[in-house]
Length: 376
Ligand code: MN
Image 1 (cartoon, rainbow, N blue to C red):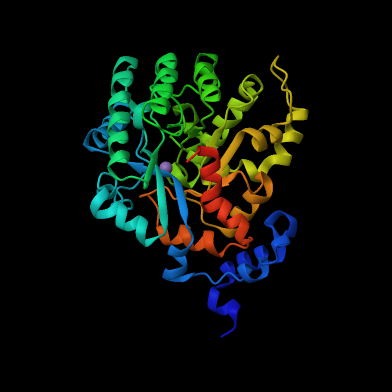
Image 2: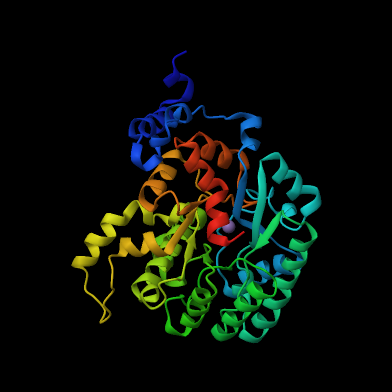
């Protein structure tokens, strides 16, 4: 049976396109081993899967209270459920349990360390600022306790009570300085207000001063965008809406001038950058033609993407997308993540380990970039 028949035409074309690209300078062919690494086999096998040391940085946990918050948030906002509970039945027992599920899983798949954070909506799910501030402290303290229990295996991103921006900045500082966290994860908008608004700049200012990144996690889009999804609930959630919402949120932050004001601020995006790496040229061309606000940015949009944004491999397991992200962002700005426990780990690992790139680049993405950017 020839290779094309065995793989199926679609998969074959995907792999052939990647192999044909072999953008040598970008993928580090200088080190001479891209050819051997480039022969994607589809399934890399159990041994290879565990072989490469990985630090995974979008990995979620929850306790009873956070799971209840998720349900309560859904009821309170009246947001239609975009996730089929049957489809993610695999995930829920795995969010709270470290001993039975998480650590054996990490060992099986070669995950040396997880940088953990709450699942969505996290602290952004609290209705009022006062409870958000109090609960964020409790949640971060609980997370710190878990991290301390398993030395060397975990680090953390803080949850921040953005409902009170000044308190959120203070909690970020407490979490970094006292709890040893490596940054924060913000679960999208706060009651559909976005982090470009000036009242939130205190958070960017503090993150830049502390030199820690803010990971912007996907979240539901505002009700205002419901019309474009009318009649197509299958396009909400991970299929399309989360990515567009989060990519747009990131562009709002850039266009508000946050990174001109705080050049040291760093934003992390999952899913290989929520489409932005693919669109860099389009962003710059469109910006030239666009009606502008009174604001004047110092650089092109693509420059901010490549100087203030890091992207992770969470939840998107296609070699052509990973090649694009490395090519657009540079090999230092792509970091490994899995999105535990919401995805099929084998897909994540097989894609990562079979995508053509040099050993040097693979080491950077699998763990060296995380060590550098998160000071692990
Ligand atoms: Mn996630």
